[in-house]
Image (cartoon, rainbow, N blue to C red; front, side, top):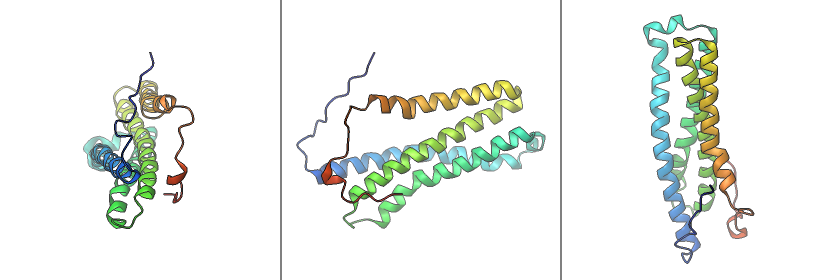
Length: 173
């Protein structure tokens, strides 16, 4: 069954009001995601100092390394829009910031999915062995990939493009 999305309720708002609202919504979403990443990152940073970490084998260590680096990247990507918002405050570059923050949010989500999959596999590898850990880690990767990326992309209307007026100052992250 396909989801039906409501049309925008405030279609009569000015482009400035729309960008203001979209930026506030995006920054709020990123705050929620960043908090989760920071908790995961903090857990991962303390793990090598726990007593049992020396028993982790080569596979577990590689999972740990990938999880830590991915969590660091996710933290950077999800925190960057708030920092950039402060630096670019009242510069007239809100649309640029909105597009950049959106891309950083997606990149941060991708890095978070990798970190969560590797962290789950690491924990399961120490409890059950390599194969169950690989299956569960892959399951976490597939589920987050589906719910966070594929499903929303499939739900986008055809021809959903950025209006020409907002494509002026694109910039990249």
